[in-house]
Length: 596
Image 1 (cartoon, rainbow, N blue to C red):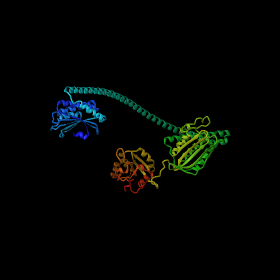
Image 2: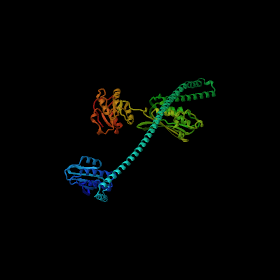
Image 3: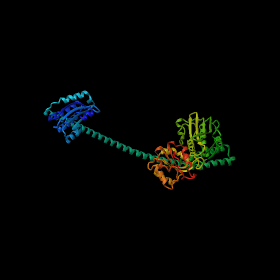
Image 4: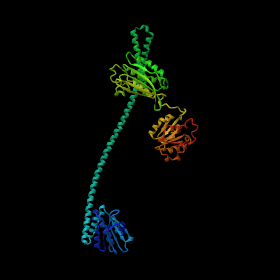
C-alpha cells in the first residue's frame, strides 16, 4: 500500500475482509494491536470504532484486504490499511465518522484507505511490534457474541472513564471557583488597602503643604521681625554712641578719670551693639533676597590694612597675636561685604584664641576654569568638636561650653559670613580640631559675579541676546544650561514642540536650538512651521539630536543651519556654530549651514 511504502512500515499481518464476522475480527484486532503498542484505553476504542465503521462500509467489495503495520520513522505509528479491486468509493458518512476519531488518509483513485494511530517511543521496539503481531493473530476466529460483548465492554469502559473525567472536571471547576473567590477577595482587600494608603498619602501631602506654608510664613515673619527690630534699635543705639562721643570731645575737662573711663566703656559698648544690629539687619536682607552686592575692583592691600587697624582693639595683653598678610592680588567684589566676612572670621578667631596667633593669608588659585582668590583664616584657639562643625553655621547656635569659659557671642558670625560669601559667588569651608585650632577658607572668584560671562558682542564670544532651547529632556537642558548662559544674555527653555513657534514669534531670538524627538509636535514639524512663516523663517535653527546620522530625514532638515550630535556636543562645537548668529551678524537669512 502507498502509505505503508512511503512511511517505511513493517507489516504485521494481513487478512481478507469478506463477512460480517471479519468486521468483528478487524475491530478486535485493531484494539488488541493498539493495546500491545502502548496506546491509551480511549484511543484504543477510537481506533477500533473507526476501523469497524470503514470495514462495514466496504464490506462486499471485491478483493477487500486489511493490512496491519508499524512505521518507526519519523514518528512511530500503527497503520491499518484497506484496499480493494472493485471500482467503488467509500461512503462519505463513514469517512467523516472515522476521521472524527483517528487520522484517515483516503484516495478514491487508488481504491485504498489508511488509518494512522500515533504511538509512544516504546512502540518502536521490536518486542512491542512482535507483541502487536501476536495480539492480531490471536483474534483469527471470533464469534458474533464475543464481539458484541467486547463492544459492550469497550462502551462501558469508555462511559466509566468519561464519567471519571467529568467528576475530575467538576472537582477542578470547584477548585477554580474557590481560587477565583480567593483572588477576588484578595484583590478587593488589596484595593481597599491601596485606597486607604492613597488617602493617607493625600492627607499627608496636604499636611506637608500646610506645614510648608506655615514654615514659609514663620520664616517671613522672622525676617520681618529682624528687620523691624534692627531698624528700631539703630536709632537709639546711634544716639547713645553719638552722645558718648560728644561728652568725651566737648566736656573732657569737666570729667574726672573714672568718669572718662566709664563714658568710654559706654561708647565702646554702643559701637559693638551697633555692629551687631547691622549684622542682624544684613542677615534679614540676605534671607529675603534684598541684599545685593555692588561689584567693583577692590584694593586688597588697603582693605586688609584698614581691617588690621580696626581689629587691633580686639587684642589685649597676653592675648593672641593678629597677623594679616598684605596682598597685591586684584579682585572684583563688594568691598563692604568682603570686609565684613573677613572681620567676622578674624574677630571670631580672636575671641576663641586665648593665646598664640590668628593669621589671615591671601593666595591665588584656579578652579572650575576660573581664577580664584583664597582667603585663609587660621588660629591656635580652642577649636570646635567635629559633631558641632556643621551646627555652627546655624543662626544663634553657640558651641557648648563657651559661656563657661567666659566667651560670649550672638551665634551670627559664621552664618553671616557664609551668607555673604555665597552672595559674592564663593564658598566658605571650615575644618577644626579641639585644642589645636580652626582653619576657615573663603574662596571667591577673581572676576566678580558668580554668573560672570562676557557681555554680548565682546571679541571671541557669539554675543547672542536671546536664545530659545526646544527640548523635552530636563536632564539635557540642565547640563547644557550653564554653557548657554555664557553664550546668550537670556536663555528661554521650551519643553513642548507645540509651544515653539509661539515662543519664537514672541521673543524674536537670535537663534533656536531644536530637538527632533518631542512629545507632541516633533522637531521636523516645528522646523517646517518656522520655515513656512515669513516672519520666522530668518531665525537660525540648530538641530541637536541623538538620532544616528543614517536615520535622519535630510530632506526635512534643509531649513536647519546645522545638525549636531548630542553625544559629541561640547562648548567649542556649539560656540563655533552659534558664533555667526546674533544682533551683530550681517544676515540671518543667508546660507543653510553645515551638518555635523
